[in-house]
Length: 616
Image 1 (cartoon, rainbow, N blue to C red):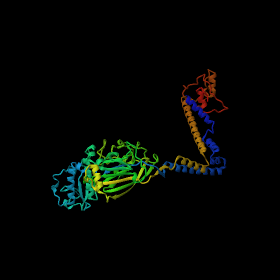
Image 2 (cartoon, rainbow, N blue to C red):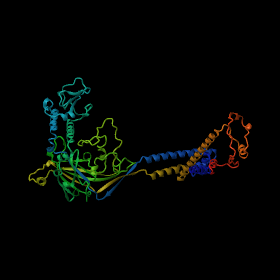
Image 3 (cartoon, one colour):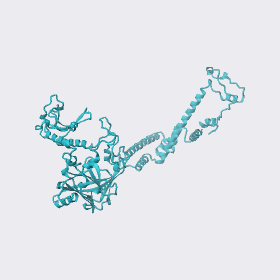
Image 4 (cartoon, rainbow, N blue to C red):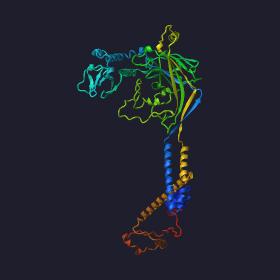
């Protein structure tokens, strides 16, 4: 009830404003606004009034168009890039080193025995198919071969290609109705491909290779992966190269270091890897000055004589420089250092500061990325590669040497693409590398004697010249560049341009906008008044519809109030009175006359407020 009274008072006060109709309100606005055009419309003659109306409409349209352009530009979230230089002592980057061969062949020979025999038979069939006997594979375990075999695709007849299994006497599948003999096709005349089939074998596809060398290498790596994925990781660590055998000497600046200063991790593609200055348990080491004398120096023994023959195609180490507390994805971002050489790596630092949402999809720390961080156990931060290696997602593919994670399922062709895209981090340090290498031509024999005695306590030389790698990692310069993104169009830019366009075309300001907002509010209130009046009229017509005849006149109501024996004169009623029934309800005597004043018009809400005992 109190809310209703308050609304009635508000409507009554509004009626005392600029006018009761839309036309009166519009005229009042044009006459009182600070904008120049509307005043001339109502004050000039007919011809000038039309001219000023067109001019005002044209300039108002231009202002709206310019506002739309500026708002669209602002919402495009463009950025500007600034470059600055800085000089200060910097933390030395984390250095991860891995052997090119993930395992020592002397320790995995028993696991790869059947695969190596099968590999030798494959090479024999490819290199000399005519001299190979059909029963050469009778004593071999072909379960691995039958799962993913290599085939020869004879495309000498493009319209009728023939698919031949290397160890089959007849074609395994053909588009031709009369395939030729198997011996007619060899590696020179056919393409070597890998046949990949689903688990139930209902659908198969072929992965073609331009060279038989690539096909055989990829096939062996895939089969070895399948074997190693069934071995627990703690056993795989024992099969790889230990830090004691890999790291022969270490020197950081003027301070000696050893393999104990490295953190061991197991990487799927390279086995045991070791990280220097990772910053997980201790504070990152600073670098005092640029140059090789103030960097990290390493001498490594890769044990090339114990490489897995068909698994490792390169001899050396794979290394990566990265930030502290970031996981090293060395396969995607690492560089190689060849054995028998001294490799020097100069580091140049660029700091990249990017804007986050809504300017780019970059994340601050990865907490808003809808994927589990598989490397969170290392207490590492988020990166782009962490988002790409999303093996724990409900639908994903495992890495070669990683067994499927919990909740893994094979990706189907009908599965939709993920709705998220891994984004970069807003702030990170980019390290540019300048790599140079040189052979150890004059390497002295006494150095091999000393290194052999220190590691193996042997007076004989146990190291090979071809298996030793020397690394020099250092800051090339102490200056760093900062590449920073900033908003190209901020809110100040937007307001300045909006105000400039409005002032130039219309001669207005912020106060003019407030006046316009005020007139909009007045329009709304007048609309509410009209709706309320319409609702009252509907209620009155509904109340009159309950009587069978016309309503009593004022004289009849006054007479009925003063004379209790008064009876209305039905003879003087209108001709339509016969249409009403005789049982028409008469006014009840004693009803007071209405509050009517013929000399003063009252607001619409007075009658209703009086009916409730409180006039406005």
